[in-house]
Amino acid sequence: MTHTHPAIRVSEIFGPTIQGEGVLIGLPTVFIRTGGCDYRCSWCDSLHAVDNQFRHEWEMMSIDTVWQTVVALSGGRPVMVSLSGGNPAIQPFRALIERGHGEGYRFALETQGSVVRDWFADLDVLVLSPKPPSSEMRTDWAAVEACIEAAQEKPQIVLKLVVFDDSDYAYAKDAAARFPRLPIYLQPGNHTPPRARNEDAPVDLDGIMKRMEWLIEKVTRDRWFEARVLPQLHVGSAPANTREPI
Image (tube, rainbow, N blue to C red; front, side):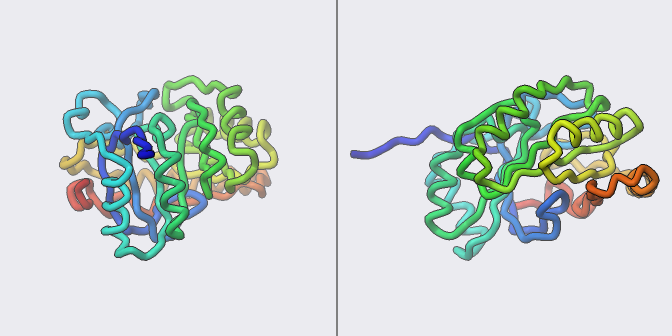
């Protein structure tokens, strides 16, 4: 009996490249960026994978096609596969994860924690990145908690918070207090204007570094020794039009 798996809405697949942020920073990774999101963050820098005006660029891809692309990009050598977006939790990834695990690949997913999936338990790394006040989005903490419960403590679970200002910093401290068992990663916000797939945008590297220094000073002054402050290595290093097409 043949099982037909639902297709995945893909914005782009690219790599291997170095993961530029969070718990897996520096790790060679193939990225599957999905199309569509239930959020509209004010500072989103991936609108080509979020906003419906770009849906004509997204492609409904079968599990086989997605996996063949990943294998071709990685040369058939197992590598970390990052599921991103948009909000990748919207897409049906269970069968892809199962297939990849069978061939030695590992999977990380980053989501704001607004959509809960039971296949979170199949992941190797679950990055929960609830959005702070500067995003102009509202966090449903019960949904974030449900994501943690769905993972059943099987993958590595971490929090990753973007911080632009004092309000975001207070939000990050509140998130850490809500989930004290989870490692927390902080990164300075990026005010780069949104860009579409083949559109270069100026990157405010000076502003990012100043926010990085400010964030380091805040954390050390508050003796918040559990927090890990990391930069975004990929910012400004690889405009969208240099990435592998889907």
